[in-house]
Image (cartoon, rainbow, N blue to C red):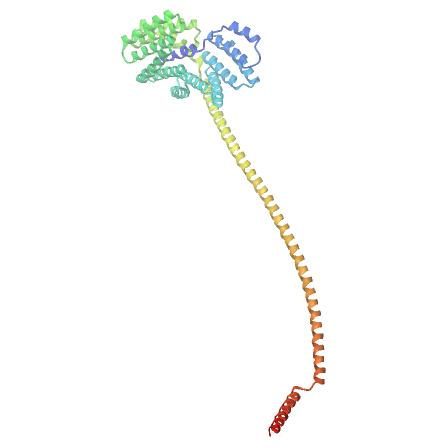
Length: 455
């Protein structure tokens, strides 16, 4: 019974953000003259959204799939991202949760690739909402908190707080639920969103009931019903009846609870809300059982089981798990592809730098070779010049030696001539001894003559 109150916030908040201003007929007219571009994709998505809001799910899916085909044709990843999201929303509203979560994950993958934070937040929020409907609360909390962290949009954040409050309510963490509802209420009040604010008040009524504040809970629920009647919003009216029925049931006011659960179910049947009608049957079954009315209790319980089994079975749960695993694998593959791409880029950069260095070394080698060649040529030229100079010196040396030899020969001839002349001279002239002896003799003769004269 505790799920009955909180799960109904899903449908109201989810649908409230998708009411299109233009009608389906006018959009279809515009579609016929639209070009094959992104604008046509948006027209298809608006038509799909309108049909989903009108619970014409087959037509909604058709136009959403047409948008996917066109986005693929024009190679628009943004178009694909939004088309998968819209198809996921339609599948969710028609209670086809495996298909819903599959399309949400496809949209999420593209939003992460495009680094589109608003769309990423919206996808995370929607996935958390599906897990909420499936009563997989840990995953619901995980994805909703991720949505809040990724979002900068006040409305989206407030919706996530509301869904989190519903999960905490089901987990019997009423204080946490009250905190989440209060955060959502503060945002909706600042935005002037009356409808969403009423919804938060209705949910707060459920929290008051769980906290044992019966009168305060019924008062809050009654006020929300009065306001809903004034706004003439069928979803709010249905939820207000359900809230009163839930609170009355919690406080063992079973007759009042049965009346309001029945009114709520009538309203949800008008809305063709297949996904949540079974909760009204569950509430009625519990109330009749408490009153000892086994027949009506069993009747509503059987209807509850039939509808629930038609919307979710074991195979669907396995399919959802498989879709999530597939998404995680694809996400890892995408991350690995980015890492591989980055490594390839790094290797390319390193290779380019290596090629640049090799080119630089080659140019340096060529330049060095040219310098060496110039030096060799200079040395060769200098060596040739030196050889020529040495050859000239050798020739000059030979000439000098030849002249020297000639001079030596001439000198020898002169010396021989002089020697020969001296020999002739010596043979003709008296010797020095003879001259000396003659001088001595003459001196003696002179002295003798002088002496004779003196006498």
